[in-house]
Structure formats: C-alpha cells, structure tokens
Amino acid sequence: MYETFNTDALVIGESGTGEADSVVTLLSRTRGVITAFANGARKPKNRLHGATSLFCYSDFTIFEKGETLNISGAALNTMFFKVRDSIEKLAAAEAFCELARVLAPHNDQGAAKYLRVILNSLHYLCEDKIPPVALKCLVELRYLTYAGFMPRLVACEECGRFESEYMYFSPHDGLIYCEDHPVKGEKVPLAVIDAMRHIVFSEIKPLFALKVPEENLKQLSTLLDVYLKTVTGMRFPAVDFLATFT
Ligand SMILES: [Zn+2]
Image 1 (spheres, rainbow, N blue to C red):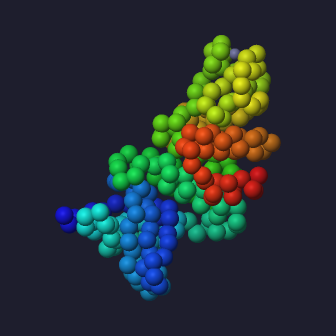
Image 2 (image 1 turned 120 degrees about the horizontal axis):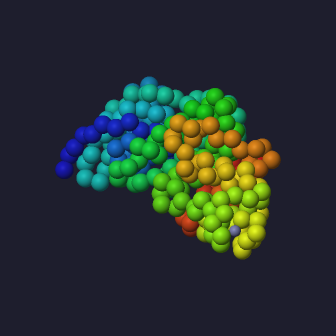
Image 3 (image 1 turned 30 degrees about the vertical axis):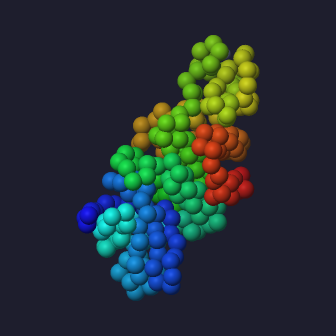
C-alpha cells in the first residue's frame, strides 16, 4: 500500500544513518509519534536539511510504503534556535522531547494537544519567560494527565479537605493528604499542590501563567520525576540531566 500524507510536526528525535541520511522521530499532529527516514537530510545542501533537525517545527509530506515512512518534503515553520542559548535550556528542550516520545500517542490520533503544549513550552523557554525546570514540570505533569496518569489533587484522601498550610503528596500513587492526616507522602507547602493543580486543571491559555516560588521548584520537580518514573516504569535520562540544574 502506497500513500502520501501531510502533517505538521515537531522533530523530537534525530539520528544519523550513514553519512547522508537521518532517521527522525516526529510528534505529528495527525499521527502522534512516528519515525521516518529523511534521505540525504544530513547534507547541508539537501532540501530536507533545514526542516528535519531537532527542535524544528515543520510541515511534512510523508510517503508511506508498508510500515516504512519516508519524508519526501519538509517546509520549516519555526526553528527554536534560542534553546541553544544555554546548556540548561537545551537540557530542558531535550527533556520535553523525551517526555513526548514516551507519553504522547504513537502512530495514533489525539496528539494535537501534546503538540500544542510542547510548542508553547519551547516558545516560553526561548523567551526566558518561565524557568526551564518549571516548564519541564508543566510538560511532565500535563502530559501525564493527558496520558491517563492524573494524580488525585482535589482534596485530602482522608477527610476531603481542599487545603491546609502544609500538605502531603505521595509520589508513588499520586494522592494528597492534609496536615491533619499525614498518612503517607512528602510534606510540601501548599504552593507545591497549587502549582500541580494549576498544571492539571488549567485551560491551555492560563496554563502558561504558571508561577512556582523559586524555593519550592526543586521539591516540585523531584516529586514529579518520582511520580513519572513510578507510573511509567521507565528511565528518563534527559529529565535526570535537567534535574542536575536545580
Ligand atoms: Zn485530611
């Protein structure tokens, strides 16, 4: 079966095969995470070169032959080149891509919301509008929520209380407890719970008004990383590398 289709997509992974060719992983609007060959793309003068590099958001034309996808055309929309301004920003962008590769649907519909979150996050990362680690927390928890791993953040599991000065978050099952019911989990200031609630429950536009007090960012990030690894059972080297910056 031969078929050609068009989709916009972000390049979330790229590796070479031989001297001239590359294999790219795309987060595509219409088919989620897909892997495609970009023949000749590693040659600087190749027509695919500029639009198939890591962190490029492009319009792709893809030729499908059986299980194999070949990129036949690519037009660059946005190149997030400012992510290379600092090692921390680059590490954050790599972490976003790693989260997308694992949590977004593979070769399936339903990826548009994942694409929207990561494109916005890369924009805010480039413009230094939100700290890189805070943006990682946003992508991480929002993607976990989309993927069916939403923690139960509404109220204390024991008494239904909505908030107390300190609360407890259990990163092994995503449950919260108030200060009167420290059943399990780690003690966190309410600001950490509020940040998680914001990431999980906000509409897309106010989502990026996320504010995490600087003194709480490391704790939030660490708890979310534990939760991520617990629910997926997977390793996240890029997420771990970014954690060395907090
Ligand atoms: Zn309680």
